[in-house]
Length: 142
Image (cartoon, rainbow, N blue to C red; front, side, top):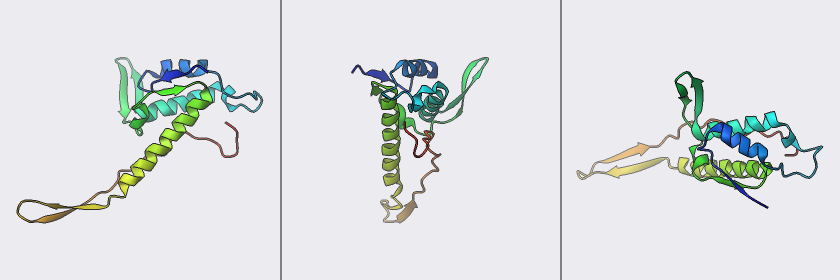
């Protein structure tokens, strides 16, 4: 099967056109949820906004209004053959990224010792992470 590279750093319109041109990856067209192009576009937009932040189109061009919540999604391009492959890979990256962030959050404090012998305790508080933008309904087939 031929694979295509999808880079979330590219403009949304290019990514959307590329993903919509991919085969769905399901042999059962009746239960295939990816036949709903509007829903697939919402998922792609959610992934794009999670990786790049939210932007608004103005007369002077795109203006960023929110920072990326999951910037690690655009660290390396997706290599996929079907729309289903993209969704699975994106979900795996989101889960993997959140797990590694949770491991970093377990750092609760550190003790610094400067040259004078003074020890200071620094407590780390993780920043709030927004919910995962990729929403799948429980019990429904992809």
